[in-house]
Image 1: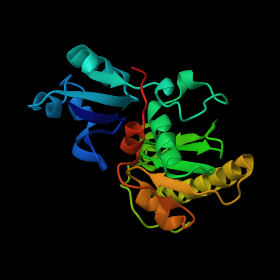
Image 2: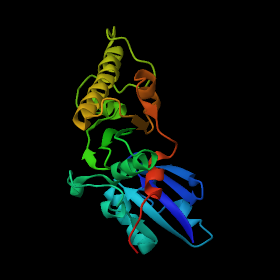
Image 3: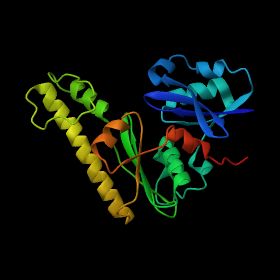
Length: 243
């Protein structure tokens, strides 16, 4: 039986196979392209028996996959990660991608650790040295902030992402938007990390950065550490579902 791992996010859906060396990515889809299909082409093309462990933050996609593939896909819950202590938080509203990130971090270290996931939204997941999930923060990512500003104003345009930190004094509107969002979000992340470390009482705990926009933040915040590739999938692979 081939074990597959699915990470279903707002922007992308990753499909990986679980090997003896960890997850091996098979394909990455754009989530908007998959939603109207109500299936995953990679699963349709499997020629050997398979089952899958999945985390999802997109309820319509989860529902479609449950209806098509039934019990072959197990959508994981916090109970499938007994190595983590969730007693400090309300798990009923906690995204399973964040739990998978925490599990991946715990598999790497038994010390306090922070995960910074830079995608559509930017999230942090904080674990103390006892493996307790202490919570975290959520804020809009750089592109989401750009889209929101363009959608809810009459004249501000949608600007592309860049990897350089813009000048604080934007001389035209597009430059001013980049300055406000990109410099502002670097400052926000720096403050969130500092405050989280204080609350964890761990002034130098590592901050592992993952997600599609991770290179921007590691470039401008050198105290951050790039997480291993396929980080969320690595966390899914650590699940211990009850039989």
